Image 1 (spheres, rainbow, N blue to C red):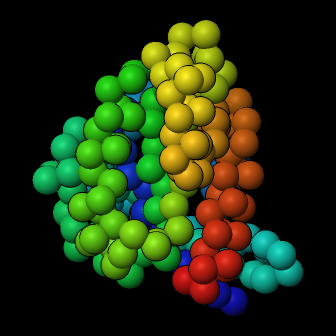
Image 2 (image 1 turned 30 degrees about the horizontal axis):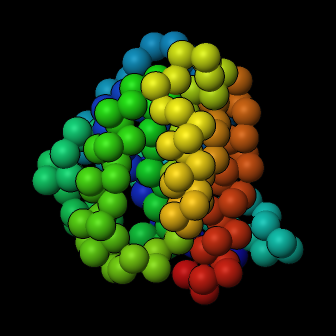
Length: 169
C-alpha cells in the first residue's frame, strides 16, 4: 500500500476540516471547529487498481502564507487549496500563498487541486464563472465541492490521488 501525505491549505473557515470529515467519516456539522496547528486524519482509497493510504494534514487556517508552519508542508505528495466560494477574498489569499507553499513542499510540480467549497449555495458565491474560467484557462485544476452535501468530495480526493500517481509522487 502506498502512503501519501496530502496537505489542506486555505484561509480560516473555508471548510478544510469539514471536507476531511465528509470524506473520512461521511459526516457534516454546521458547528465551526477551528483547527489549531495541524490535525492528521487518514483514509485508505483504491484508485486505478492501487491502494493508497491517504494521510490528510488539515493545516490551521491562515489569511497569510507567512503564518503557515512550513515544516508541515515538507514531504507532501499532494496539496489541496480550499476556497470558500461565498468569500471571494479567500481565493486571493490562496493565490498569494501558492508559490511559497510550492517552494516549501518541494516544488511547483507537486500535484495540487483548487477546491471551491460551498457549491450547495452557488447563488451566494462571490467568485464568478468568469474567474473560474480564467483560472482553468491558465491551467489551474479546479473542482466545485460541498462539504455539506458531499457533492464531489469523494471525487476530489480521488482526483488528487490520481494526480499523485501520475506524477510518481
